[in-house]
Image (spheres, rainbow, N blue to C red):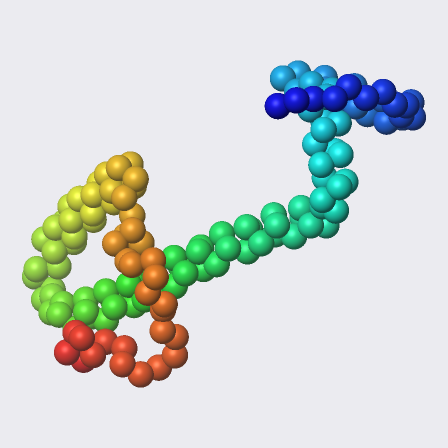
Length: 146
């Protein structure tokens, strides 16, 4: 890329600010900072434009988190409905054994969840990204025979 040498004057305040910036980012050159500033000036990119782009990215990230939370809420609700529907009552004589067995199963569950998270795979990964979530009543649980 051909470059043209220019000379100009800046205020002492801007010079101090430039030196402070370059001290914080030693891999950047004075020329690269001035080049970027001029490019921003000529493309009419303002701080507000940059802020809006960042806010837009944050909004998309928050939307993804909200979608993931909605997936977990529905999955949990379906699990609880099925669990209540298919778990028989336990007699008083079997209660101690059932509690011991439940504690063992819970430990296995926690270990499995830990392995899934350590492997980078989550439940939300199994849900298609492009499937919009339906909100409101109607049709919930029909696939499970309710």
